[in-house]
Amino acid sequence: MAKKQLNVRVAESTAEMARERAEAQGISMNQYIEKLVRQDMGETGRAFVDAAAQFMKEYETAFLAEFGDPAETAKGARR
Image 1 (cartoon, rainbow, N blue to C red):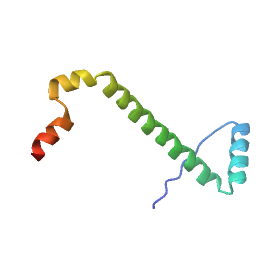
Image 2: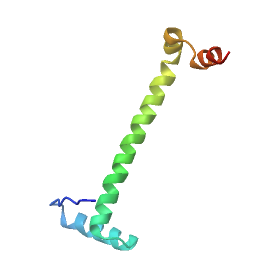
Image 3: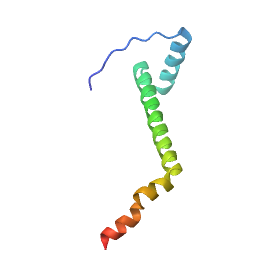
Image 4: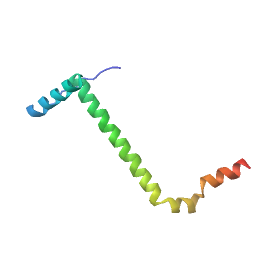
């Protein structure tokens, strides 16, 4: 995979904490930062799915009234 170099300025204490965490995990600073970004993206994805599930739960009755029950539609198609 191609890599892109990023230059980031952080407080000295933040840089030291990152170095310590990377070392404790036995990975490079680059790997540690990449891992943090990927974790953050995963949290965003989970938050979206959770919000969508909550939306569907709140509006389930309206969807059923408008479009019918998909389980019932599938049963009718099998007959």
